Image (cartoon, rainbow, N blue to C red; front, side, top):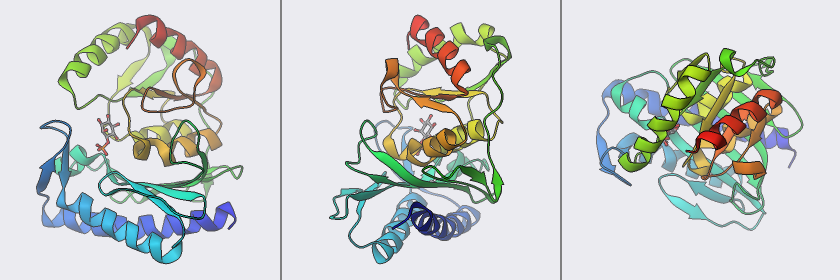
Length: 266
Ligand code: LIP
């Protein structure tokens, strides 16, 4: 199936899940459980949205695999896998901060960000209605408007987003890195939703985004949007983006920022 047809499926399913999640937010949100730490929470809406997404994708593409944040992985027979974060920015969703997203991507090969080829991706903020999309080789869009990363800037003029782990030990180290970086860049943004951070790099609303410890479903769609908008999206020391490290920026800035982060060590 052509990438654009896969993108149409991703977009339609993301809209349906976004409508559900927005209704649940309006009705009031309750924590269902905690995961890796007391502050790594999952809401009933996360689980309900992923079940809806999983069912709709199974109806549309029954032979594809699925890899979701809340219900785990199921191999398919088609060679394609849908990588899904039903509500990215869960803490923002819980607190009613209108900056969270439905992130749906479809990849070819094993569902491993070190080896997969992303074919199509969609990131929808159901509160603002902004829909970021990309298909491999077809460019990136906000609605129908094509996206392009911001022009190259020197580090002191770079607006850089990042995120932090749910583990307090790792947050201490990440905070120390930010203390080193902050005087050397324009400013830092920590907005709590990796998929939107990556899409904001694509849209030129950020000059760069980096994070360590991110799950595949957090970046699968947003990384494709950023790459199709002209960003360099890379992992640690030349590897592909993964849980180890992800950085997205205009290519020249990506080199400068990666050198700085590696020198500082995170
Ligand atoms: C979140 C990411 C964010 C990261 C958070 C968390 P979740 O995903 O979008 O960038 O800093 O720690 O991983 O948990 O809301 O799906």
